[in-house]
Image (cartoon, rainbow over all chains, first blue to last red; front, side):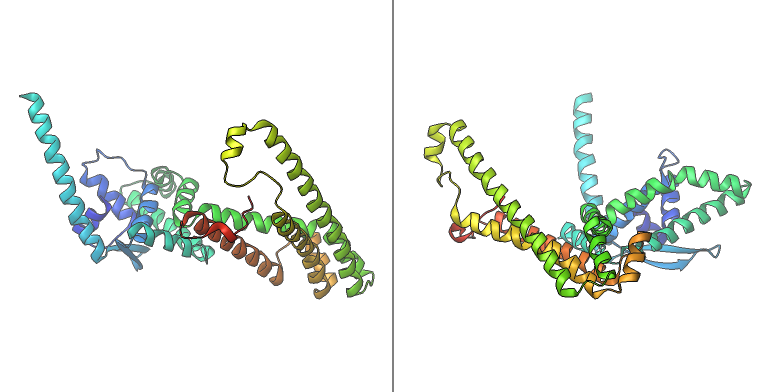
Length: 98
Length: 245
């Protein structure tokens, strides 16, 4: 979700990412914002993200995260994998109904 | 490759973790400020907005904790802290203080080192002797308890191996001598009065003590890695290796 958010929104800070994830879910997903940071760190350690300090719209210093090339590939791969999984599940569910 | 890369970075994070801590503190502060700004814009007072932001964050301390768990390698950080604590306790311990006191009273360097050498040699020899006696006794117990068929099948005869005893005894004596001589040697190189003050305050480590802590940790990890690699690789010929568990 973090990678996808960054893909669609471009560079964002941790707070922005957490807010965006909640908004995209239509507030059905309630996040503890603190949990975003270990996840961001993990993705950065794996080389999917890079970070740099910048200034926010309201003039606050913030650390911005951005997708790397590997991160973009990972979004594409994970999206494909997810679509395949859900399509398989959909077949099963459809089969059970009929 | 990704997990390996992540582990290497986590290993690298063990160095300069104070700087990284400061950076994460700044990031958390900036997160809270951004959230508070949003709350104030939505009509909350600043205090209420901060309260809400902290609740939504899930608390500052748990966030710090989970982030710290992911950043480095917890057990190594723990090891560094334990060693630091151990060395500090050693400095505060009676033997260290006694050496410093003797130095303050005017004992010569040679005399201090000699005293430390004799004390450590006696402790080392006693330790090695006790270890050998214990090993001999355990071999006897094992011979009575283990089934004959198992003993007959085992690759090596169950006995106290002379080479292993020699190597273990030498290591025990060397380790004890080092443990005794290093503090004595360091104390003769330090300015006694300032060292005593550090001991009294339980204050910060001196540069040499810090180097010593790092040296211990590097050696310890190197030995652990050697054991791990040696244990895991089938290409190592075990015939000329003495194993000590």
